[in-house]
Length: 619
View 1: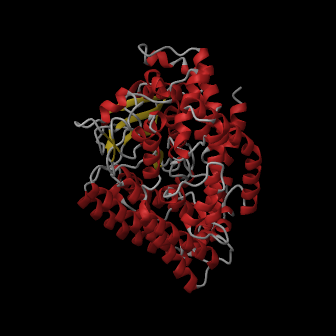
View 2 (view 1 turned 90 degrees about the horizontal axis):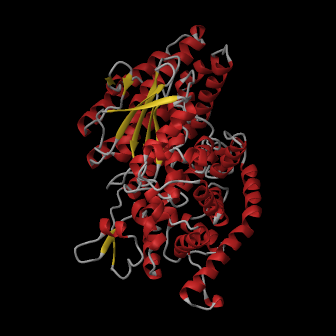
């Protein structure tokens, strides 16, 4: 996201999934080596999902009956991986269509399939007979040992070792959490609200922006997509207009999502209690690099000490600039949350001669994508070739990814980069098909974003590179087992590869190569790169303090005494220098903690430390 979230809307590492056979969903081959995603209508999707589940249950029965004397890595681990691949052939296409298909009937049908698959997955991971067979395997290699460990932990985290009554309750909770998470995401994704502003309220907005959103009567109508919200908050001179848009944006999830989040928090706490754990944070972090919540809290305390004074300095600089530009006495001037983007932009223009809207001329969307592919090709020795395949929308592009030296097909990449109604609102990479060297399986990643078609700001460019880094993590993965592929790593590491890929938006060595893709663009020289990097460093105190707040809030809701979501947020945001804005309901749109990042949002800053260590290796 171009606010602190959209960039990080990535889906995260995929859980180890259950044994399924799903031939009805097998991707269609296009050409000798290419594999692409099936584009399904609602009727076919529903029928195929049902048939897949029928076949899955038959596969489970077969494995249940495998004599323990015949258990081996080949009969259990290899088969598990093959059957899990069949599940991915269902879950991958369904997950992406659920979030991006323009037809609501398809999105709704996909959501129903997601719920069925999730429930079945929990059912399988609570199966004592399957657990016994996996536990009886004697691994022969380190990879097999890790695979067995991962799968067994998934069984244990699903409640296979709990007493029957608690096991059944764990399944009920898992099913309900999946349904609530789907509803939460849908309420944000399908919010088609448009706000109307007068010509006076739109003063200061770029003409290219106005031409896109202006109505016949001279007013403008804008929604909650990034290409609308970001430029408005950065350029609109009318403070009351910025405030109205800010409050609307911060309530876009609606009251229902606050109710959903409260219910999810309570269910997670109850789930942890089934295992005798004091909090959901304890349940989650035991499988992470940090190992326990205490380590997270210590890390967040260290961050606080590092950024609190930097945030105060940044805000004081913005306050002085606002006083100067508004003509008010400094002692009577206050910086509000809806002021931060606007005055930060003014300060960057003044101190660094950086105008984000002018940067769009340097980074046209089409040429920036081509340049991004060039950068990745040079670094990794691969080749991207655009190919026509069926897609869910005309905007979507597909690329074959091959090894540049040998020509061997490595996988495929879909790009869905521009906003539309009913589409996922931020930016993320979906690892819809993971590699498996054992199965000879090539991977596919899908990058979803909501970029401005005319060109990109510095932040949007970093977002594009960040999410593409996730996609590369999937497409260039070379793991023996499918369930170790790509981003199937610990959640508090998963952001590091994508964060380091952002580095190429900051280096002259890479930026200067853009001219080959866009000779008509204004030139990028070392002086511009230096100004860009200096302008990026301004405001880091504000940015990191906000990330710290998100992380601390997540841990509070995942803690031993979580409280009600909005009340906790009001208290925590109210304690920050900028305070809480009355009437806003940010938790209702905080998709990370309604999804896979609960008790894990700290991982963005944790993995950035790892990424910075890797960056040092580039110098």
